[in-house]
Image 1 (cartoon, helix red, strand yellow):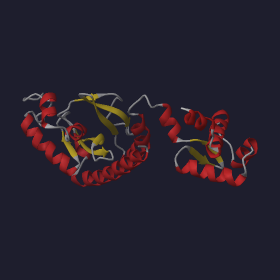
Image 2 (cartoon, helix red, strand yellow):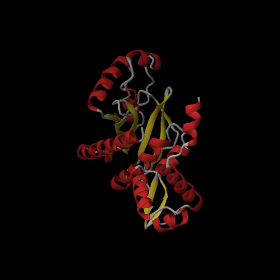
Image 3 (spheres, helix red, strand yellow):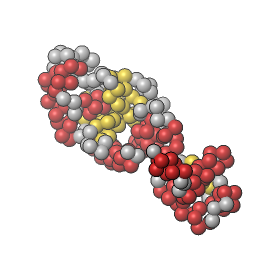
Image 4 (cartoon, helix red, strand yellow):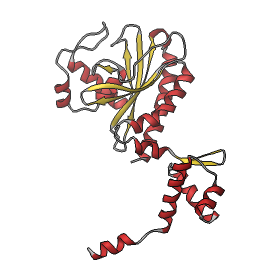
Length: 256
């Protein structure tokens, strides 16, 4: 106990300086390196090393010569929302995809026993597919849904899915065993397609976002009106979705 008390009295100078910088930027929102060095009485060379390290770790942001608190602070401050990290990381990618393809893109998760949309960017076109954030989708119909349940055990699937599944369109897979065969292919190929299974006139592509253990934790999908999703366009969007999902997965691993 005495050793613990002695250690508690000791300080680490570098960490104290970091703490001063965090407090200063919290109060002032942003500042230049020279201002931080002068106001906190930290040598310029030391300030430069600390700031560079904090930027590389995403604790600080740097723009137009000004430093401010970075992405990690926003993520940590919203830790109670278990999906905030993936939403924050995925959002700019969804925007980029939507601008590039002029389609709606959404991020979905398996939330307890339902598939839920937790983020979406809708196409700017007048004619577009509209999706509400927090919208719930059936487990067995839809590209994102098939991705999200494709790694579940057979026992879990049997618990979640009835032997005969609800029919939404003439293309809906209503037999649980047939769906399991489809899910096996989805898990192997890490891509799923919705051939107007949930809604008439709408097709979709979905790919998984994986954690460090190669487990599926979310899905990015692109629902389109069936006439716009030609075989050639399907290949192009699928390739881009896989690329984006891989980048998001890498960024998520960085925060673990």
